Length: 426
Image (cartoon, rainbow, N blue to C red; front, side, top):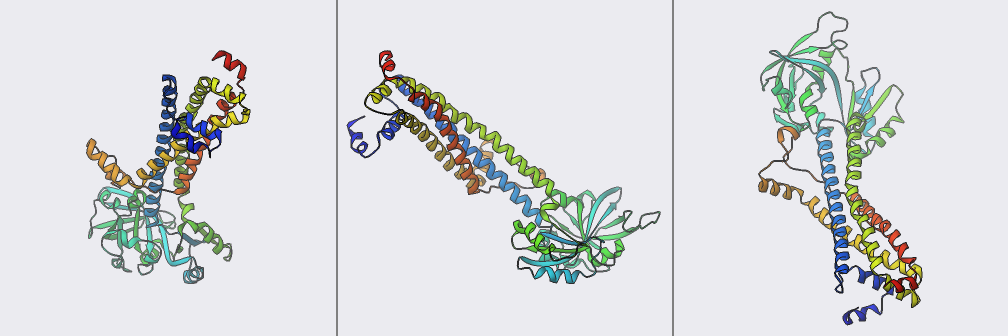
């Protein structure tokens, strides 16, 4: 140790002093510098792996949130339906549901599968009957309208609002006619030929979600009842305060309803998509965690080389009274410091990238003259990012744990060094 270091060493356990000293670049030999270089590369590897994992998971969280929000612009949080297919007392169901403090609004609906045709084009569509005065209580359909308003849906006029992808597919604009062909099991009811109804395109909405923009259309609920020969709506759709509490609220409501009433929440309606996203996040975590694992276990070779290089020092410490546990502690501290510094650097870098991804990606696109996200495919022009501190803590803890595990074997090897043999070979 240099004289400038001796003052603070008096108040530090010698295991910490020696372990911290070994993490710094040596000046006595090229071997010391080489070992320190390997330790530095391990530290950088951990930092880059942690930063990459935080950034990627934040982007995936952002995508999930954006898709969920766009989905919930047209999908209710909870649906209450009668197993018979009709709910003549939907007002009572709505009043019952609104007594729950978590429920913010309720509105009736009626869904049916139809075929829309215009010219030679034919498309399968979910025709959703809504009550324009009540629908804004349960969805954000008003905010998704590109052309027209909900007021154009008037009973008896058979006006329809099409999705932003469905309208071009039918070559339909606002004011154009479209023919609806009811499928068997709804309007046909044992008829030999389908029932054809002339509709008028009165508006276009864009939820930003391809599935709904390409296969969903809105009509007034009274017109839907006429088209589908239903005496009443299918059920009631609800909006609650916290979308993540939808399964719990649905269970609470179902407990006080008869068995003939069925409740489904938005997570059940899109269970396949959410399960796929969850699986992708897990696999991405495992794949990127390998980067951290490789960098962390580079510490094994670093510490092993340090142990072999410092055998004389270990022997002197043992003759001065150091226990095998103290020797082991020295090298655990050395590896842990490398892991902690690398993890802290990676967390800082990853957090900065995740919080500023909307600035970093456009800069790279301008620099390389490329476009990572094609709006016609992804329906968004910039990468969304949502940093979750739970993920940051999990990744940081995982990296530190791997670094600690990587120190165990070299440290155990150092504790088994025999002083006499080490001094003879030095």
